[in-house]
Image (cartoon, rainbow, N blue to C red):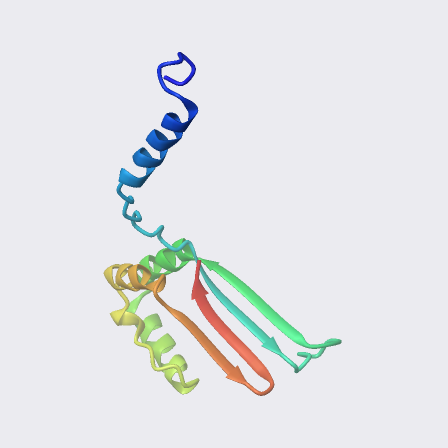
Length: 129
């Protein structure tokens, strides 16, 4: 309308302001699902090398899903042996109770979780991205 000479530049500016003010804010869409589980460890300990140590692990969530599905293929005797070894190592996880629907519930909540562990000589972060 301004280019056609129907309104002045001042009127065009007021129209643009009115239109932008009346636009309702669009609600944010759903959060994108996390694709990776990341574990970062920073330490003053050098882990056997020169300088401070740093570990940065990025695990695809799809790999976690596939791993859970693969547990259904492991013979029960092997699962019992693995559970015993895990318990002996201080990891009390029962692999026979791990089901695909459990991992999906976990994945749904992973975007809400960030774990930071600070110690005088180390920092551990676990988060999803």
